[in-house]
Each structure stands twice: as C-alpha cells, then as structure tokens.
Length: 310
Image 1 (cartoon, one colour):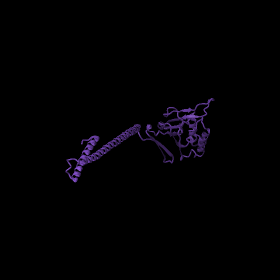
Image 2: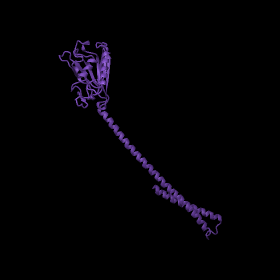
Image 3: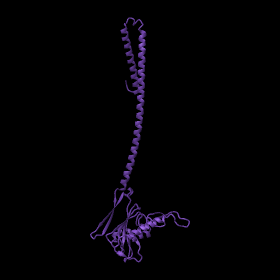
Image 4: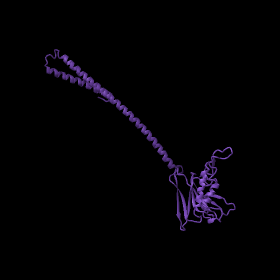
C-alpha cells in the first residue's frame, strides 16, 4: 500500500521496498516448482476500467505552490501500472522474455486482495510473442475459457479480490485450497462462500429493531402501571387507617360519656331502688350497646371508602 508516489513519509516507502528486495533476494529459484507464493495485500493490482467493479482511482492531498504534493496520495483503489508490474516481475519472477530463468513463467502463486467490496477474480498475463508486450488482465472464467493460464507464451498470475463479508454482499467468505498434483507441483483453487442472502440479512435486522422497540414500550407501560398501582394502594390504606382510628376514638368517647351518664342517672328515681350490683350491670349493658353502635358507624364509613356494599 506504500508503493506509489508521492508519499507523505518517504522513509516508510523505503522500508517497504527494502522488504520486497529482501523477499526477492531470499526466495527460491523460479525454476523450483515445489514453491507456491501467496501474497496478501489490501490494494488490488492495476487493471483498466471495466475489468472489475472499481476502476483505477488516485486522489491526492492539496498541492503546494510549486505544484508538488508534499502530503502524498490521499486515496487509491488500485496500485499503479508500474507498481503492479514491479510486484509481478520481482516477487513472482514473471517476464516478457522467454530467455529468462524458467522461460519467464516465474513462480507459482496467487494474490489475494481486498478493498473492492464487490470482489473480482482476474488473471494477469503478458504476451511474450508480442513486439510490444504489456501486462493485461482478464476475468478468470474468460481467461480459462481461452486457455490463457496454460499457454507457455503467456506467463501470468491469478489475482482474487475477495468479496466483502458484510451483509449487503451476502456475508461472503473466501475459501482457498492448495494441493499437490501427481507430478508433485502445487495447484490452487478459490471459491466464494456466501453465507446469507441479502434479504435475509435485512429481515433479521428489521426484526431485531422491531423486537427492541416493542420491549422498550412494554417495559415503559409496565413501569407506569406498577407505579400507579403502588400509589393508589398506599392511598387507600391510609384512608382506611384514618377511618378506623376515628371510629375507635368515637367508641371510646361514647363509652366514657355513657359511664358518666349512668353515674348521673344513678341518683334518679328510676335507679334509686336498684342495688349497686344491678347498677353496674346496667352501665355495662349501656356501654356495650354504645360500642356496637360506634362499630356499626365505623363499618359504614369503611364501606364508603372501599366502595363496597355493607
């Protein structure tokens, strides 16, 4: 990703090229068929417009007064043609000259890239028989149909831009396979594994949103109902307690009044002939009757508060 110029930090680009040179210098000879190279990178190799969903795009930071770009590249969705050619001809040893080691066919391998969410599967190749050989790219199925990967005069390399794993792109995953054939040479295969359909992804997320909304509304209603019920119950209890206390006080006051009345009446002509025991019995009867009357009044008040029939 730090191969093209201009760059904001030249030292980082220098480190990148030093790394590539170390890889090339320590690699096995291109003639050795028992080696398979897998290059993982984010920015795809160069392709002309129309081969994949995304075409080449370079965007730079604002230029300086002298017309240079001191802050380098701001955005790119492909490597430049020169950077792509450098990768194919250095790391993989591909060449337009058939007199190069291995006939210019280079090392076996594959490039796995990203960035383009739609995904793309292409074959990069160069025609050794052309008077002006240039790197070209075709879709992998079309290249296979034309027999380009098996043509000795068309050395090339497959590049797979893995489709995005996001739901809008069917939750795609890439499955790559490597195996040794009967001749002891490495062979490779790649397949896209789409986990879900796009509409399934949307249905699941919409259902989740609806469930969350219903749960929130239900919780709010339950909380409001419980709060209102608690307040009403406490108010009713307080009213009942007040009425009960009022009834008890009234009963006590009437009992005392009845006792005093009995004591006053005991001097009258009606009770003058009664003995002291009979007078006490009469006072107790009057007191009990007064308490019954007060309790009846209290019950009626409670019935009014609770709104139930007596």
